[in-house]
Length: 503
Ligand code: FDA
Image 1 (tube, rainbow, N blue to C red):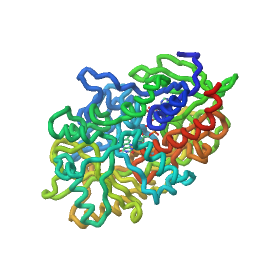
Image 2: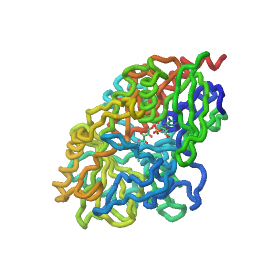
Image 3: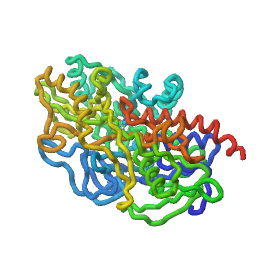
């Protein structure tokens, strides 16, 4: 309610926010978790909570009147269609040089993502988080994060025979024949459930192509893991469809937080003010960066570091497809949860996942999302004239990622005598180089914050999400975001909160 005082206010309910809420509550702190997206806990008129990938509807996009599908075309035909404007689950947020896809709702990105739960190779960790003790991370916080997230592995025997992973086995065969290392990657999707889907015993989700717009079954999103445990403490209040607009020091200590309540059309229906002793920014790399950049520029938090808003990267994301020969069908049934990674990071700066193309028909296509060692970093700035936050990322910077991805797929194409698909991102366009699924940075650890995420310039303000990571994790990022949040909150609870809880 407006006028309330809370001990801790957490902005955003993705990985960082969920870890913070749970661990603070366990330490005895009353937590108010504010999330701009919907709760996603109630079935729609069709009986399901989430829309199917092949049949997008109003639930699919955040305040758009037309879908913006990452794979925009097929066989040259545009796939996008009109939808009613609604506070849907996937935000395709456009900046001048890049579209950043993000989850919106209680659970953040865990609602929409592919569930790939990958821990970076330890020898690369020094480049990912240079100021963090790797020993502590690999012995303590990565295992804690994987356990908390419900990470599990596919049964290799089942995988080898499953129709729904034919596409992944074709991807593996081609990687192997070109001499690239590959691995089965863990996931948070419940593989035991997936086996029962394949056997026809339970309603289908991954095997019905569900990804991007939510999973109705089988996926262990944060709603089912960290956030369920946070609610069980009885100390966490969650406010969906509430967006934090401002944070500023309060006259008598703590912070005044201005929160806008939204309706499902995206209109503001009420403005509330809460006073919080501590505020945790967990609005995701883009959300946290936008807030900090705006609040510094507009005078709400003028003492924030000049580093806030800097060091943003796209995890080097780039997509492409290959056209296989007729003797390499990839299957009409494809599990929406990827399981195979091709690791050419050391030699070529690319880690590729063999991604599904769940169209329901045989396409003879192999589809990949590559994570590459792109060195470019962008900055968020406040445009006072338009009152918006801009991002300096340039489309041409993706060329470095394309080159690294080519280190894999040019060689595979040569070996197999195959070509790139040119019909997935437009007409005669090979590379999906306009987007990222993995925004990282903007409040980089030990730069905009101290080495545990305390924002420089203000006591009691923290960043605890993907904004802390300087632009790249060498693999898919959410396990690292979660493990870093576990590390930081443990240190924050042990030092900063002891006194305030005792009081
Ligand atoms: P996250 O974005 O999860 O959460 C931030 C939350 O804050 C959101 O719910 C948002 O609505 C809310 N918010 C923002 N501003 C706010 C405000 N002002 N007030 C209130 N709330 C606000 N990663 C991976 O490791 N494996 C994978 O397989 C995939 N696959 C994948 C697919 C797709 C389609 C996407 C879009 C992303 C992935 N990812 C992924 C990436 C992964 O989902 C992402 O890195 C994390 O969700 C980021 O976690 P954070 O905690 O940083 O923020």
